[in-house]
Length: 142
Image (cartoon, rainbow, N blue to C red; front, side, top):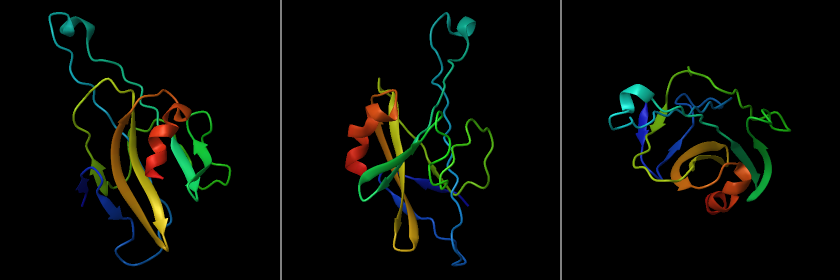
């Protein structure tokens, strides 16, 4: 069963049987707003290239970044699998609403408290093309 998250909502990623969490898979999807007007039928749907990055932190400091040019973290704990149109069972979903002229979105935070892993939906619009551009927007969420 999937949980629909709202902004700033946090959920436990603990397994219901109490066993140890081995891995978490996160996926992002998007659907472009339909074009309007006379030429919309001729030009077709907008092409969107959604690039995801994972910023890994320890003690509120950036330890590594995983993105399309660095697909595995230095310690091997995080892997970016590139574009993938399928994923396993969906446990949680966070649907973005609204629009605007921002070019990025700070999506979620996965963190450990003791032995328990948590995920928090952030949904913070930002402006930037690379993770370096987004660091000022990411910092308040560390």
